Image (cartoon, rainbow, N blue to C red):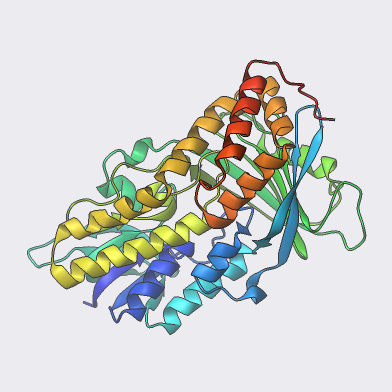
Length: 394
């Protein structure tokens, strides 16, 4: 039986990053991934991700410079990003990450994880089935579950993983227009805060160069996903754009309170709930949690102390727990009625809000250096909450 230091289940940005880092440290790593799966995703990545994870600019299909927020009344507010946000094609991007992990020394295997088995020997046994239906078993010292929001690894080994709150995301990848199109800008991301599109989340039209992602998310059962995307396609003038593919998957909305089983399993990325509330942004946080999980596993392998596995979540929440808390409150309050969505989009016109929002997004931290701007935003928010401010920003 093949033996590994770490088996990483899932080859998205989380798993590929963890496998790459561990292999680069000299550990024997197996990266197990299903064949051909692409997660529905807007594909936005901040410059910090490109720099921090050494991503070549050639992987960026586009660099958008504006974000348009669209209210229930169809009032649109354009926010100048003050730089650029990269857009990636997840099929190309994820495969590049997996290939990098393999070049660093990880063993890539294509197959579906089934379960962990234990016997009288040290370390669990990973049972998986390849594309031909043949069963395989490998022994390992540790397992990283990076197999998404519906993670089988998490459900089997992490307390309360089955109760992780989620929205279901659905998008259609279409061919971007080759000619100028009313309602569509290849350098602008459009975000729809409309109940008819999503009763509790939002919809998006994100250009990726030759292709565009049109999608939405919701936790409301029975809401028409395809009907919502039809509205988005019509609103952006892309109703007749050829469809390349369609995809759907759950997105977690809250980080799990535990990421490890106290023994030999650690979950990361979507499997751990490492996705920003309100925005659903996940690529940067997926890769960061993968890196922190790799560090935690390396520490365990070096010291033999199982407490090392807890450091992945501790470090992640120390860095981003506060902003996740703020975004969670924002989603619960602003997304629960058309009136509040209208006011939320109105607030987005404010220059202080725009500047601090994009600085926080680009740097992945709350901006503390401008207290006067925060005070101004507080009183403007208060006016909107009390209904003293105009709803229509025009």
